[in-house]
Length: 157
Image 1 (tube, one colour):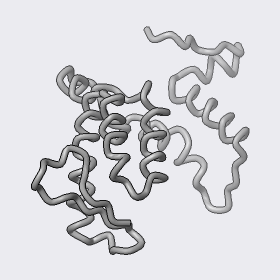
Image 2 (cartoon, one colour; image 1 turned 135 degrees about the horizontal axis):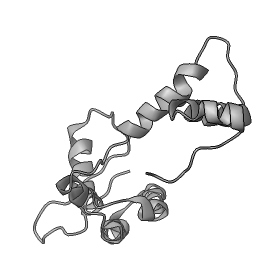
Image 3 (cartoon, one colour; image 1 turned 180 degrees about the vertical axis):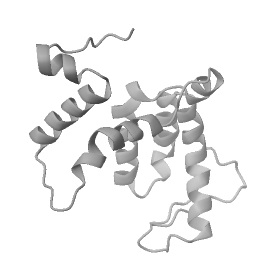
Image 4 (cartoon, one colour; image 1 turned 30 degrees about the vertical axis):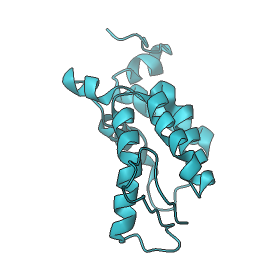
């Protein structure tokens, strides 16, 4: 796929040329520059939580796009996740976490360490049940549950 021109190009400036991965290796400098030129404003808006503006950049690019399927997938991805895309800049300014490290660590402690043994097979139901019990144990509620069938409060204290 070769795309001539790009949204926001000034008269007299050379157009942007995108090359499909299948036609050009991933190490192509032209491919990286083209992606950066197209996606930089999209990423900038996404960083600020401005998903509608990011989608607007992609929609403005639509007349120039030769691979509308790729464009539609990206737009759909953003639309489906819009409620979950925060203003990362604001979160950083207020010292709030913006990474998934805490979630990944919780997964490692709750699920991965116990379920990745040699020859182990897990269904969704048994995996979910084990994760619930392991979470109960890590949160210090195992004895109350085992003796009194008492579940810990789900409210933060």
